Length: 315
Image (cartoon, rainbow, N blue to C red):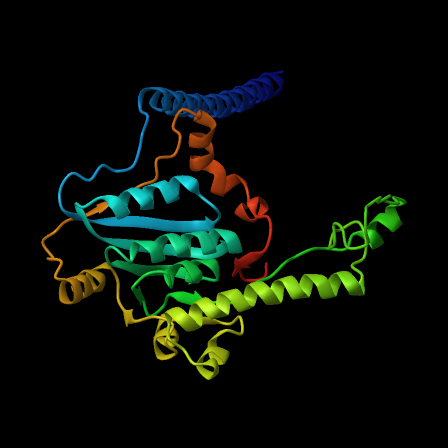
């Protein structure tokens, strides 16, 4: 009898312990949900009460502009650069680049915007961990390029990626029906094999964009055809290698950029450097949430469309 009672008491204690643990887990989950809701509410309130904007520069300074992540067309970044170009209190611009590249048009647009500013005031690029493909294209729009010894740069080239799902669809018993105006319309696409004619047409587009990119490098870096052939084959370079091959001008970081500005443009090292940020629309709360969680939840590569100039290791 006593054994039965003891067993019952032990079982009750075990059940009680399990229940307490279940309640603690539930409480932890609810606290996490509450914290997330508070974050969302704060973001929405800030979006409603703060219209944001570019960092206002009210005294002589050097503007520090960040280019990171995937490079695409960005009219807000363009507006910022245009404002900095026309702001007499901004004596120079340091472009802090940390990006694997992006779309060809995104890189081309940023290249042209930076190149235009160099006609008015000095612009220096400071590379971080990575500045490849379209990011390197943007960098050569500046007057001077600095990288760390371990920075990864180069990857001069253009690509278009697709896939052929026809074999998989056949196994699944799915037969796509494609009606189009001509054989080269919507080629390449995953729903049909790429034809020899389509492959040739796409290759011609890639070759044309690669020629554009190569011409930019040759002109801005003052390279001969032979020098260009050694660096424009799609490979990546460390900062040390890039310096030896004429792709960058110096090894270092912001300190070296300030020294170059002082030596070559008489811009005092005492002038402060201030961050300047694009005036993204702050009244759209979902953009705030995506800005916080986007990189954690979604692959930025899914945003890319058109021709790409981007470097990424194979997964």
